[in-house]
Image 1 (tube, rainbow, N blue to C red):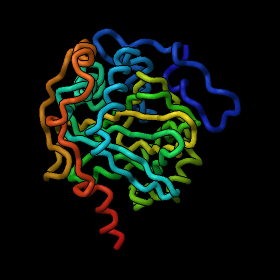
Image 2: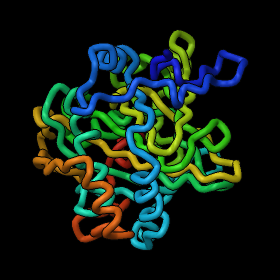
Image 3: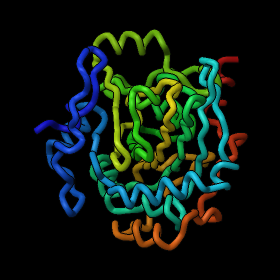
Length: 309
């Protein structure tokens, strides 16, 4: 039986990726992680959990997101430095609708707690809208490369990348450098409108650590460390690649001053069955509770521009 780490595609390997989507060991009913899963996360910087959400659950999320006019209206683009633009919508509070049901469910929050070894709180969530033919790229970066500027003292944050659509090499799936979170925070500079990690250092790291393409099916979730180097290519395929990413900070890592993202706010965790109950009751989210981010107030990447002047 292959591990989640084996279920990704290595650039060095010439053959097709193993079909490991159905060869995983399901998470225990109480959402606890095994010692080997915890060790894998701390060694590799990421943990891939297949089928964490079933087809009905992820279907509610997909339908809500793709029919959500306010989500679309609050979306903004970030120039990728390669002639394209990545489109996303970001909100600070989990909300009471379908987005919040995913961000606050035990399956996600309990895993985040185990990986952080602390009480997690919702730092923000975002919908990455990598549309067919036009979806832009993400430059190599660490999330902490952005969040360091937000008065966050340590990189003890974790992101849960939820595949809404299939993610493949062809439509710009996530790429990670396994173990790169051990390299510490790397200096970042503006790449288009994005914070990009120092390319010389990234190249040196990539020579010593394996690069992985994380191909995912809807309902799969990738948990990854805030210092893990990751990127994605432009989507030139005929297929969209949307994903929702829920980001969590540790309570003990509460920022020492306010920023455009929240300080510690206790999470009201939901039972896992609430996803289907909420999904059956509504086709859009409770937007008033989300607090969408105005990109003009996002100082994370802009602070790099100030430093480089």
